Image 1 (cartoon, helix red, strand yellow):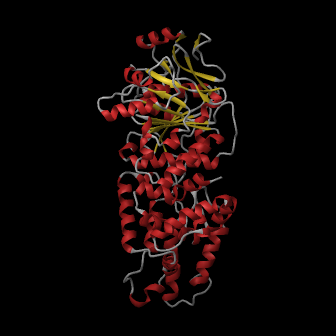
Image 2 (image 1 turned 60 degrees about the horizontal axis):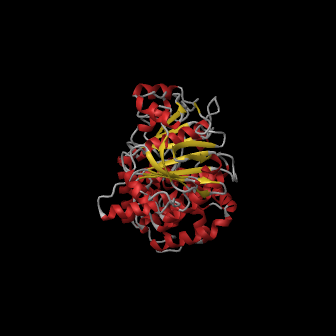
Image 3 (image 1 turned 180 degrees about the vertical axis):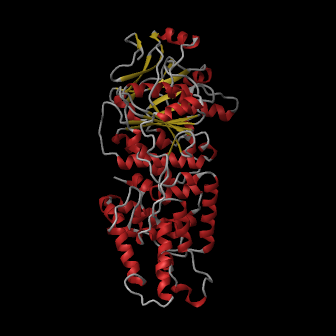
Length: 540
């Protein structure tokens, strides 16, 4: 544990971030009011992120951070007392003592960390449409597919479940002549068409977009065992918060998948955590690197819901810190919710750059002693302008400070060190092996098999025909236990009762979607479409 002069050491209720003419403190009780770390490439954003993550961990607050370049992984290893670190620590009155922090690595692709999985149902049609870059018509058809799955007790876990469902709701075309509408999947197709014109061409486009996602490795993200977010919210044997690092170098090759995945995580946290009120410190702090990707090309409805989640999730005890190059990357409604600010240097070589610098300066509470816009361009590496919340939640005047040096290693770890950390991970073995349980794909295969029997001359007894299908569906709904993420019709109805406050909002959104497929999808139909991430976004 680091020791130092009492004026610059972490305390029970504050984290020491840096020092200039004034000392920069981040108050733990106000840390769930969110924050922003900005600056040009190479100006020290990652080091600032590491300093904040170390402070939270020392205070017993679990941390989740996306690691784009791999540099943040060094927080898991003992720091090195290099000359420039000792020099900076000495200038601040710190008695530098190297340290390290308990770390768990996660990786959507399961290569450099524990696999991170979600079910198709948990992702929901809104975020899945964004991930697939679907237009309004295609998004409407995807909503229809989710609705039909609910009504027929078809659980959507992985990509093959969604593919088989899309095949099932596609128009029969010329499958088997005049009796095509009486085949084994006729009822599912009729149910889909009752919501509007679900065309083969639109189904084909969605299937092709799924193929693109599969080729980018998205198949590994959908499946079971699904991630339990409580595994992020742990402390180690010393009472320090665990540092959860998402290895995102490969994930960043598909920026839309990266942004949608992190938005899904936020909405899941919002849905699962109870109201906490004002706490002496956060339950979890979430660092979202390359934050501009979350907002790029996002439709207005989605931006509104992002703003809503950021505004309300603090009442669950979660602090969200966006890391990006410039404050103008973040929409104004979201920016207004980010009370704790760290601004590293920006460069202004063009009129557009100068405009960005001025915009960044205007986000701070002015300090009469500083020309904020000029200082932003003069900051050296490791220097920053900071303004943190204090007292009743008002921001301090902006100050120029030198960021304290991290106590853990600066820079990436080796593959051997990563392997050793994985070997002693508290979730070792829990997520490492995928499970392929019965879901929509297998259910549709069984339905084809059971309805084919009467056509071959059987008498249509209790095991087949429509009675057999009904019995199968009832058994699916009421006779089995369903793992997290597997929503059946009965469960959707029960959940919708608990979310009745959101019905009017959901009905409006789904009514808009319905226009895309030639039908009206409001009211009770709309309510059943909400699940997973979208359910979290709209929960009261």
